[in-house]
Image (cartoon, rainbow, N blue to C red; front, side, top):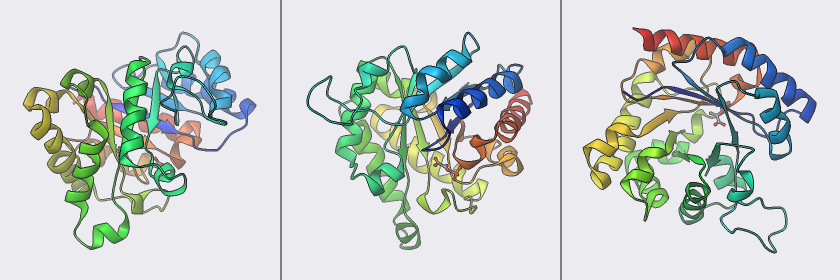
Length: 256
Ligand code: PEP
């Protein structure tokens, strides 16, 4: 049985003080829901303060990016190994990084390998654009992204990471995919590609999240999809109460 995960991607939001306060609120609001993995991903500069605010509470902290080299002349970058002690997770290949910062399947693969080597759990994002969706290219494109991200990884490594299917047209738009659509791609494309590459046991063990305009009002339906193991949450994770509510609802869905 895969444990559900609610991962909050805070993007480029919250000052250090605001991030610290939000982390404290999340610890308070979600401490009872231990059947859900909770992960919060602030900006790099807030990692240390958020880690301290989380303290011994079982809430994971994640970065939103990392670089694959260990050190050197790479101005502005942060090595995966440098995140050790500050984070347990790292989001890799978010569509905003692919769109605005030139990330490709190849760099996503390098970052994923570096994260795993550093002992971090990568949350690897994949998802098609509206144009690709409308052209009927979702399956081939998303499957290709999964293959690109996982190139050269062992089955053991793959089942330790998290894949997040995030259709670009649903991110920050208020237009969530229907739970059926999201479940079909998470199962029929993302998990199916893992199955094709690594076999049934690895596919069944690998967590696949959905992301794109999730909120308290639609999370129950989304979490009822058998191939969706959680959500990568943007906007709704910036508010402690709405994130806490999504954790509570997920916890209930999984008790049934
Ligand atoms: C995201 O950016 O990963 C995301 C899913 O954003 P939102 O929930 O705001 O659509």
